[in-house]
Length: 274
Image (cartoon, rainbow, N blue to C red; front, top):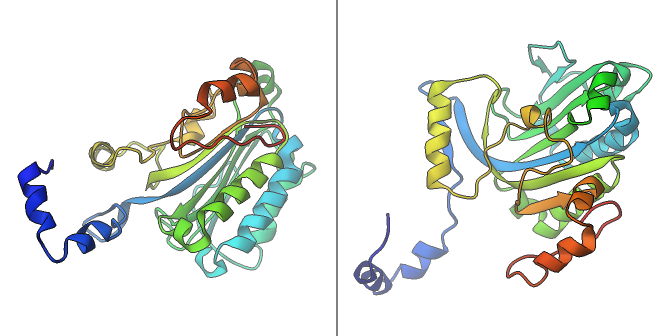
């Protein structure tokens, strides 16, 4: 609701005026009738690579181990491993080794389609998740439009816990370690469970929340990766442009020349991306 000048003047006369506007906004949450978290605000990181998934295995394995060591271990309670897997399984003694087998190009990392996700603490719409979607199918590589994807999610308060600079540095280091990096981003987002599966009630709530909260990302990157080619998902809080995207835009220098000096925008060069 828009506040009129008179209303604002009245608010400023209140003793608790500063407290009203200094109070942090509560993260967006929508729960179902049984208490399940249908929509939640959080952070999403998505990194896209081109070429055979197996060629990215070493970089992804390093990224996965770094992520596992960074997030609270007690929050990782579920996994879904394998392109044909349909039911989440509780975290067990073999969970991490099963996940890491997806980074072995001579084993499960060499299959035509590669998928797994490690997540928690809840099984539905978790706060933490590490998901991989990859292809080793020659026809996909020849068409050069489908991209491999690694997507991570974090709770809304994660930046406050770890610090903005540390978060950005980590994402940049992950992207730098991925061969064939095309593009990526990190942003505040509206997170849902099973975004690929159509759910009219949930999707209507997401659409309404997106209009009320401009700037929150609404995504379905596992579908976007199929046609992404040498593009990016637009401008975000943290936007990473790899060499294929930079080449289409005239190179890193040309991009910097167009955006340097923009208020609120910082541009930094990393090996292989901007």
